[in-house]
Image (cartoon, rainbow, N blue to C red; front, top):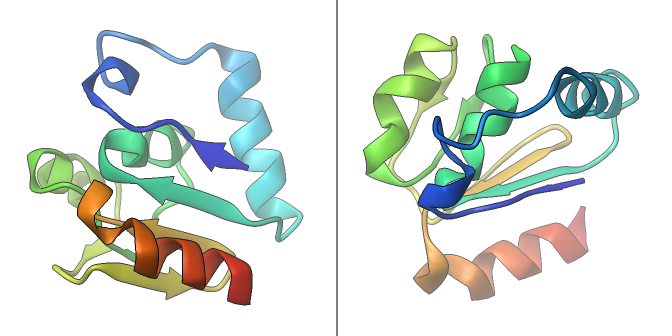
Length: 101
């Protein structure tokens, strides 16, 4: 599962209950969750970040931390099935991490 990125995927674009359930189910099943930039709002809203280490665009850092994540400022972070990246310039490293997962 890939979480959309960009400001349009944020608070103004509230995810439906079905979409949040899909994120929760994918995470519970250990399926790959690929998240970049503002896409971190999806797993934060789904409640699957508690105790997880991740990165994201600095604009939503407080949101993911408030959702229980351990934020680190790195191009890419892999925490189990969760692969996260900060922003588009990190795409080469993000793509490599997704392929390796």
